[in-house]
Amino acid sequence: MRFDPPYESMERFTSPARPARSLFIVAAVLALVWIGFWGPPWLLLGLGVNRDWLAAFAMGATPAMLFLSLSSFALPIAALAYGLRRFHKRGLASLLGRHPDAPDPFLKTLRNTGLLLVVLTLSGGLVTEFILEIRPLPVWLLILPFALLATLIQVSAEELLFRGYLQQQLGALSARPIVWMVVPSILFALPHALNTVTAADALFYVGWTFFFGIAAADLTARSGTLGPALAMHLSNNLIQFVLFGYKDGPMSGFALILYEWDGAPLTWMQPDYPLASAIFLVISFLTLFLLWLSARLAIRR
Image (cartoon, rainbow, N blue to C red; front, side):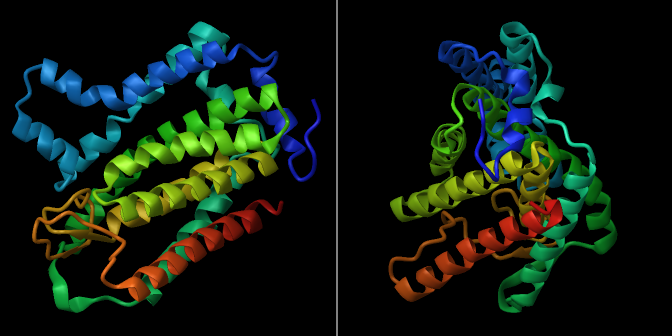
């Protein structure tokens, strides 16, 4: 099977998945991983954990709870490892791809995307009016290594599944990008609608996440390794977790700067302020484009 430029490296990346297996086997592995993604709350309930603790676990408003919440993504990684060994007779490392300069693509992409996001975030300025608390710097610095570890676990679970397993397996079946790039990106994006409370937010979040998946798949196909996509994903999520959050708000446990939160659902799209929503959309997708471009510069492909 031959892949057209600029995706020649997909031939090397998909080699562990050949000969291609049945889609029923791929579906079985997906089901295992899905249980790993959604199983922790039910597992904790079965162990007798009370619902208040579960709510705190899901909210992630303290460093300990956010660390536990993100670290629970180790379960889908374990499920994927079992499915790979059971049905494909290969290990997790085979999902990473091979690159003659590894881990160089990962580190260079992490540097480029991380610096870009820090510059973009700080250049936007701080809205100081609603800042409720700034975490003491020594405490925040102590939190950072745990934030890095937990975020790495979370993004690794998603990248190993969508850009690793699915992109390899579907790429072994077809060289057409609509198969190995678009389908995994749709599956990656759709569950993010569960994190929203309005239809407008769901459309935005699913759409943005879909194109993030396309960008990550493109980087993986160009480089023949999961490193650049993993680095871009890590930079994006880590910056979101460690810089800003809402006091006692969702996923704010690692944040340095905490804003006031009235407990109302957090939304991105504001129907009453269409111009502000339009500007937000443009900035969000432009940031994604710059992320992808900075990663492209890192891998020089």
